[in-house]
Length: 233
Image (cartoon, rainbow, N blue to C red):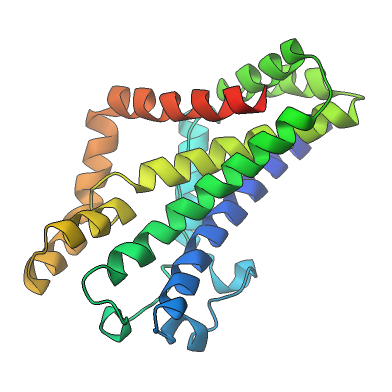
Protein backbone atom coordinates (compact mmCIF):
# COMPACT_ATOMS: atom_id res chain seq x y z
CA UNK A 1 0.00 0.00 0.00
CA UNK A 2 2.86 2.38 0.84
CA UNK A 3 4.41 1.78 -2.57
CA UNK A 4 1.13 2.63 -4.30
CA UNK A 5 0.77 5.88 -2.33
CA UNK A 6 4.35 6.89 -3.24
CA UNK A 7 3.69 5.99 -6.88
CA UNK A 8 0.55 8.15 -7.03
CA UNK A 9 2.49 10.94 -5.30
CA UNK A 10 5.11 10.94 -8.08
CA UNK A 11 2.28 10.78 -10.62
CA UNK A 12 0.78 14.00 -9.23
CA UNK A 13 4.10 15.78 -8.70
CA UNK A 14 5.10 15.16 -12.33
CA UNK A 15 1.71 16.53 -13.42
CA UNK A 16 2.20 19.66 -11.32
CA UNK A 17 5.67 20.41 -12.65
CA UNK A 18 4.67 19.63 -16.23
CA UNK A 19 1.95 22.28 -15.90
CA UNK A 20 4.36 24.77 -14.29
CA UNK A 21 7.01 24.31 -16.99
CA UNK A 22 4.29 24.77 -19.61
CA UNK A 23 3.29 28.12 -18.08
CA UNK A 24 6.86 29.33 -17.55
CA UNK A 25 7.58 28.73 -21.23
CA UNK A 26 4.73 31.06 -22.16
CA UNK A 27 6.41 33.77 -20.08
CA UNK A 28 9.87 33.08 -21.48
CA UNK A 29 8.53 33.21 -25.03
CA UNK A 30 6.86 36.54 -24.32
CA UNK A 31 10.09 37.85 -22.77
CA UNK A 32 12.05 36.78 -25.84
CA UNK A 33 9.55 38.65 -28.00
CA UNK A 34 9.84 41.86 -26.00
CA UNK A 35 7.25 41.67 -23.20
CA UNK A 36 8.58 41.90 -19.62
CA UNK A 37 5.22 41.42 -17.86
CA UNK A 38 5.83 37.85 -16.67
CA UNK A 39 9.34 38.72 -15.50
CA UNK A 40 8.14 41.67 -13.43
CA UNK A 41 5.29 39.55 -12.03
CA UNK A 42 7.83 37.01 -10.72
CA UNK A 43 6.40 34.19 -12.80
CA UNK A 44 9.58 33.03 -14.56
CA UNK A 45 10.31 30.55 -11.78
CA UNK A 46 9.68 26.85 -11.19
CA UNK A 47 8.55 27.45 -7.61
CA UNK A 48 5.02 25.98 -7.25
CA UNK A 49 4.13 28.80 -4.85
CA UNK A 50 4.17 31.27 -7.74
CA UNK A 51 2.01 29.20 -10.06
CA UNK A 52 -0.49 27.05 -8.16
CA UNK A 53 -4.12 27.82 -8.81
CA UNK A 54 -6.17 26.21 -6.00
CA UNK A 55 -8.94 25.20 -8.40
CA UNK A 56 -6.97 24.28 -11.52
CA UNK A 57 -3.86 22.82 -9.88
CA UNK A 58 -5.45 20.93 -7.00
CA UNK A 59 -9.24 20.61 -6.95
CA UNK A 60 -9.90 19.88 -10.65
CA UNK A 61 -7.02 17.39 -11.22
CA UNK A 62 -7.76 15.49 -8.01
CA UNK A 63 -11.48 15.47 -8.76
CA UNK A 64 -10.94 14.18 -12.30
CA UNK A 65 -8.49 11.54 -11.09
CA UNK A 66 -10.95 10.29 -8.48
CA UNK A 67 -13.89 10.28 -10.89
CA UNK A 68 -11.89 8.46 -13.58
CA UNK A 69 -10.25 5.96 -11.24
CA UNK A 70 -6.92 7.74 -11.62
CA UNK A 71 -6.95 7.26 -15.39
CA UNK A 72 -7.43 10.81 -16.64
CA UNK A 73 -7.02 14.33 -15.38
CA UNK A 74 -6.35 17.80 -16.57
CA UNK A 75 -5.35 20.93 -14.78
CA UNK A 76 -3.84 24.34 -15.09
CA UNK A 77 -1.70 26.78 -13.19
CA UNK A 78 -2.35 30.48 -12.84
CA UNK A 79 -1.95 31.87 -16.37
CA UNK A 80 1.37 33.64 -16.84
CA UNK A 81 0.50 37.27 -17.61
CA UNK A 82 1.75 38.94 -20.73
CA UNK A 83 0.81 41.99 -22.75
CA UNK A 84 0.42 41.13 -26.46
CA UNK A 85 0.78 44.82 -27.35
CA UNK A 86 4.38 44.73 -26.09
CA UNK A 87 5.37 41.96 -28.49
CA UNK A 88 7.61 42.95 -31.37
CA UNK A 89 5.60 40.79 -33.75
CA UNK A 90 1.98 41.82 -33.36
CA UNK A 91 0.66 39.34 -35.94
CA UNK A 92 2.38 36.12 -34.97
CA UNK A 93 3.71 36.96 -31.50
CA UNK A 94 0.59 35.76 -29.61
CA UNK A 95 0.67 32.47 -31.53
CA UNK A 96 4.35 31.97 -30.72
CA UNK A 97 3.73 32.65 -27.03
CA UNK A 98 0.78 30.24 -27.00
CA UNK A 99 2.68 27.56 -28.96
CA UNK A 100 5.65 27.67 -26.56
CA UNK A 101 3.78 25.80 -23.83
CA UNK A 102 2.82 22.74 -25.90
CA UNK A 103 6.25 22.72 -27.56
CA UNK A 104 8.08 22.37 -24.25
CA UNK A 105 5.73 19.54 -23.24
CA UNK A 106 6.49 17.75 -26.51
CA UNK A 107 10.23 18.21 -25.91
CA UNK A 108 9.91 16.82 -22.37
CA UNK A 109 7.98 13.83 -23.70
CA UNK A 110 10.63 13.19 -26.37
CA UNK A 111 13.46 13.41 -23.82
CA UNK A 112 11.59 11.01 -21.51
CA UNK A 113 11.05 8.63 -24.43
CA UNK A 114 14.76 8.74 -25.31
CA UNK A 115 15.79 8.08 -21.69
CA UNK A 116 13.19 5.32 -21.43
CA UNK A 117 14.54 3.65 -24.55
CA UNK A 118 18.02 3.65 -22.98
CA UNK A 119 16.75 1.86 -19.86
CA UNK A 120 17.94 -1.73 -20.02
CA UNK A 121 14.92 -3.81 -19.05
CA UNK A 122 12.92 -6.31 -21.16
CA UNK A 123 10.53 -4.75 -23.66
CA UNK A 124 7.78 -6.94 -22.24
CA UNK A 125 8.28 -5.31 -18.83
CA UNK A 126 8.18 -1.85 -20.41
CA UNK A 127 4.90 -2.76 -22.09
CA UNK A 128 3.49 -4.03 -18.77
CA UNK A 129 4.47 -0.77 -17.05
CA UNK A 130 2.93 1.38 -19.79
CA UNK A 131 -0.26 -0.70 -19.87
CA UNK A 132 -0.60 -0.58 -16.09
CA UNK A 133 -0.07 3.17 -16.09
CA UNK A 134 -2.62 3.74 -18.88
CA UNK A 135 -5.36 1.79 -17.05
CA UNK A 136 -4.34 3.04 -13.59
CA UNK A 137 -3.48 -0.44 -12.29
CA UNK A 138 -1.36 0.93 -9.48
CA UNK A 139 -0.98 -2.39 -7.69
CA UNK A 140 0.18 -4.05 -10.91
CA UNK A 141 2.62 -1.25 -11.74
CA UNK A 142 3.99 -1.28 -8.20
CA UNK A 143 4.59 -5.02 -8.44
CA UNK A 144 6.19 -4.70 -11.90
CA UNK A 145 8.81 -2.16 -10.78
CA UNK A 146 9.39 -3.55 -7.28
CA UNK A 147 13.08 -4.11 -6.55
CA UNK A 148 14.28 -2.81 -9.93
CA UNK A 149 15.80 0.69 -10.03
CA UNK A 150 15.87 0.51 -13.83
CA UNK A 151 12.15 -0.31 -13.98
CA UNK A 152 11.42 2.58 -11.61
CA UNK A 153 13.35 4.96 -13.89
CA UNK A 154 11.37 3.71 -16.87
CA UNK A 155 8.13 4.19 -14.95
CA UNK A 156 9.03 7.81 -14.20
CA UNK A 157 9.79 8.33 -17.89
CA UNK A 158 6.43 6.77 -18.78
CA UNK A 159 4.63 9.15 -16.40
CA UNK A 160 6.47 12.14 -17.89
CA UNK A 161 5.39 11.01 -21.36
CA UNK A 162 1.80 10.49 -20.21
CA UNK A 163 1.29 13.94 -18.72
CA UNK A 164 3.29 15.94 -21.24
CA UNK A 165 1.64 14.35 -24.26
CA UNK A 166 -1.74 15.07 -22.68
CA UNK A 167 -0.84 18.69 -21.88
CA UNK A 168 0.70 19.33 -25.29
CA UNK A 169 -1.95 17.92 -27.59
CA UNK A 170 -5.00 18.70 -25.47
CA UNK A 171 -3.83 22.32 -25.29
CA UNK A 172 -3.45 22.43 -29.08
CA UNK A 173 -7.17 21.90 -29.58
CA UNK A 174 -8.55 25.16 -31.08
CA UNK A 175 -11.01 25.80 -28.26
CA UNK A 176 -10.71 28.88 -26.02
CA UNK A 177 -9.03 29.25 -23.60
CA UNK A 178 -6.63 26.54 -24.83
CA UNK A 179 -3.41 27.53 -26.59
CA UNK A 180 -4.63 26.13 -29.88
CA UNK A 181 -7.32 28.82 -30.07
CA UNK A 182 -4.70 31.56 -29.91
CA UNK A 183 -2.76 29.91 -32.72
CA UNK A 184 -5.98 29.64 -34.73
CA UNK A 185 -6.88 33.30 -34.19
CA UNK A 186 -3.45 34.34 -35.45
CA UNK A 187 -4.28 32.70 -38.78
CA UNK A 188 -7.87 33.94 -38.72
CA UNK A 189 -7.83 37.25 -36.79
CA UNK A 190 -10.98 38.36 -34.97
CA UNK A 191 -11.84 41.56 -33.12
CA UNK A 192 -10.81 42.09 -29.50
CA UNK A 193 -14.51 42.14 -28.53
CA UNK A 194 -15.15 38.70 -30.04
CA UNK A 195 -11.93 37.41 -28.53
CA UNK A 196 -13.08 38.58 -25.08
CA UNK A 197 -16.41 36.78 -25.52
CA UNK A 198 -14.70 33.56 -26.58
CA UNK A 199 -12.32 33.79 -23.62
CA UNK A 200 -15.19 34.48 -21.21
CA UNK A 201 -17.35 31.55 -22.26
CA UNK A 202 -14.68 29.27 -23.71
CA UNK A 203 -14.24 27.27 -20.53
CA UNK A 204 -17.87 26.15 -20.64
CA UNK A 205 -17.48 25.11 -24.29
CA UNK A 206 -14.36 23.19 -23.31
CA UNK A 207 -16.10 21.32 -20.49
CA UNK A 208 -18.99 20.49 -22.83
CA UNK A 209 -16.54 19.27 -25.47
CA UNK A 210 -14.76 16.98 -23.00
CA UNK A 211 -18.03 15.36 -21.92
CA UNK A 212 -19.75 15.22 -25.31
CA UNK A 213 -16.75 14.12 -27.34
CA UNK A 214 -14.89 12.02 -24.79
CA UNK A 215 -14.59 9.17 -27.29
CA UNK A 216 -12.93 11.39 -29.89
CA UNK A 217 -10.67 12.92 -27.23
CA UNK A 218 -9.64 9.50 -25.96
CA UNK A 219 -8.76 8.34 -29.47
CA UNK A 220 -6.98 11.60 -30.29
CA UNK A 221 -4.77 11.49 -27.20
CA UNK A 222 -4.40 7.73 -27.42
CA UNK A 223 -2.82 8.05 -30.86
CA UNK A 224 -0.12 10.42 -29.60
CA UNK A 225 0.47 8.41 -26.44
CA UNK A 226 1.06 5.31 -28.57
CA UNK A 227 3.51 7.20 -30.81
CA UNK A 228 5.63 8.44 -27.91
CA UNK A 229 5.48 5.18 -25.99
CA UNK A 230 6.70 3.27 -29.05
CA UNK A 231 9.72 5.58 -29.07
CA UNK A 232 10.44 4.52 -25.48
CA UNK A 233 10.40 0.76 -26.13
